Image (cartoon, rainbow, N blue to C red):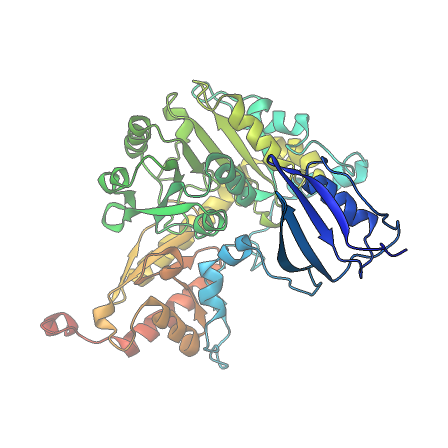
Length: 496
């Protein structure tokens, strides 16, 4: 039914009495009328009738009558539907420097030489470091039991959290199940910690060189990253003065990665105490990335950060990936150390809420946790570390003998960093070009340390079989000999 004339819809907006007239040549739908009722606060009356099933007009002539004066606002256009799908701001801000550099490499390996990838931090790639049979059997038993196929609390089974708490509990850093949150790998543990501690516009302190994921996660959430320096001449200890100079009123978290990826360094007890002193003095909580905590060579000792302080609240991140050599199983955890109740319930509740976004890690791995933690034989750990140390010594010795390279001996983890004396390789502008050409000529792939915000170094992964490591070092030597040039004034060195 058409409205017989211009339909007045009158009401009061902020104390002003007015009238809106909609020209008679359009149907007035009930929905539009209801909208105007809401818009005008419900204080008006209708004259005329609206049809119940009319459609909204594409254009309305809107007349407003206030205090006896009439004016025409013009034609109001309704939204015209069209496709406009765009990526979110979070996705646009997500950037992984390793992927950006590696994916943009334009060179191809030498077809006459088998590719040796010293770039992948996955100990399972070459098949020479399998997990222990007890670990595999634990997973089979969990699957066969049929008990772990359903949903569980997002922070993990209580029994599984009790096992992790018991495994890492010590008098200096006591733990209970309530202090453990299970996550989908250590990466998610880090993400949850950043998400619960920092808001957009605040900042976190991140090591340089350091694991690229810290920046990737932080910047996707609008969190500023401030880089503190590690010192290669001091076995990658932190430059504590420079670190403390970065802290301001917006600093909400200090990330400490020990043992280090990419450096393979392990901090001494004394150095860790100095780091804790800075955090305590500045009242900055610590995110301790300790995924490699159980991968330390025999001549070094790992000190869990939480065992050295009861003053500083610490979120320690770890998981099965490295110690048990199963990174694809995606089982990580957060250990909450807060003996002075600085975090209180808010941070704990926040972590629980954030964990509910994906409803927890794999239930089968949770079901196997008790057996994995309790039944894995000590000899398995010993053999893994012995192999890694042997490869680290081999690689360091071989590369240290090559003019133009300055490897730094690791004390743990799965990596070794090598400095490039770029003045002796003038045809390459930086570490990215150096490693690209190494791939092109020798089919050896090492990650340029620009990936870790530390140019003119490259990272070597030491998990490859020994024969492959020897071959890779031999090719790197051949490459360097072909491209090495004496710097001015150093002819005597070149004649050696």
